[in-house]
Every structure is written in C-alpha cells, then in structure tokens.
Length: 102
Image (tube, rainbow, N blue to C red; front, side, top):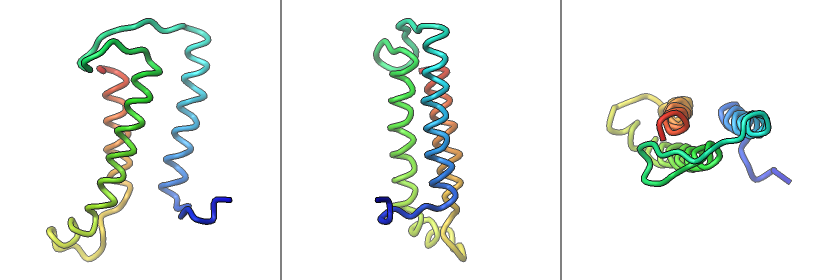
C-alpha cells in the first residue's frame, strides 16, 4: 500500500511525531478542555486549531526545503544536498512557536 513512498528515517520520525502529537492533544483535550484565545494569529483559535495550522506550515516548510535543497547545494558549493533534518528541526520549532504564541 505504501510502496510509492520513500520511508527514510526523517520521514518516519516526522510521521511518528505527528501521531504522538495527535494522541497527546486528545488526552490533553479530555483532561482540560480548551477555550478560544487570541495570539498573534489573526483569528481566535483553540489548541487543536493551532496544531492544525502548525502542521500545515510544517509540511510546507519541509516541501519547500526539499524543493530548494538542490539549489542550496549549488549556491553554497556543498558536496551534497543539505540534510532533511534541517527542515525537520525548523518545522518543529515553527510548530512549537505557533502552539505557544499563536
């Protein structure tokens, strides 16, 4: 079923983190129901809203990085393309920022 997908370690870690976040958010919501709040995002959001927005942005960060990795290698005169772990760390930091301040 998933033969089309390249299951590398970063991909597996990324999806495992998403699954753990969803489980954690479900338990958190059951124990402490959320209320609407307004951060620097231009709308009132709940924890689930911020998680969804953060996951979308994290996915786009990773896709953009994959798309420009070859150009980064060329521009920075690197021997190999930059590691996908860079975009993973950046996307998780952005997700954490959105969850905390968004």
